[in-house]
Amino acid sequence: MKSTSKLTRHASLCGLVIILTMAIIPVQQLHAAGTSEKSPSTGPRSISVGGSGAVSLPPDAAAVRLSVETEHQTAQTAVQQNASRMKAIMMALSTLGIQESAIVTTD
Image 1 (cartoon, rainbow, N blue to C red):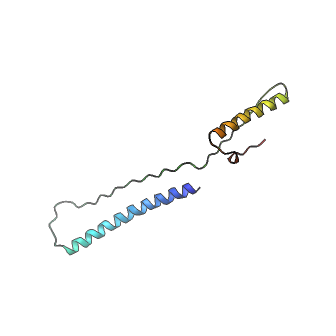
Image 2: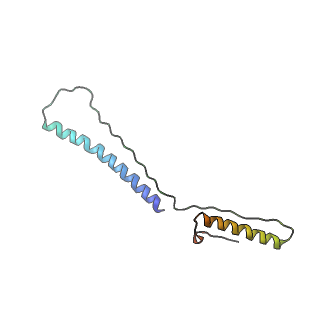
Image 3: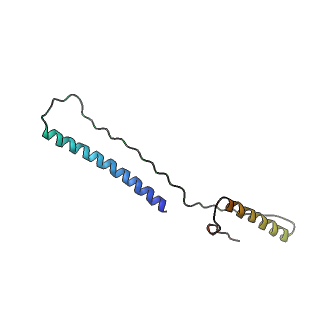
């Protein structure tokens, strides 16, 4: 949630800079035109303003739901196989750097 607010803040700041730039340039030109002698127009007057921005933030959350189902002739064997498979999944998540406190399991 914090990264979204940072992204919004950065985008708002970029927009504000562009708007202020567009507002200041004409004011400066009017001021300069009033203090200097008028010169004949040499062509159409134009103002070009360009800008770009990029924000890159690492992801801070992910949600994944998965289940392990095992069918076997005996319930005890199915439960043991399920437990073994779930343990392998938990070890794989740990290997990826996901902390155990960040994982929620249910029955």
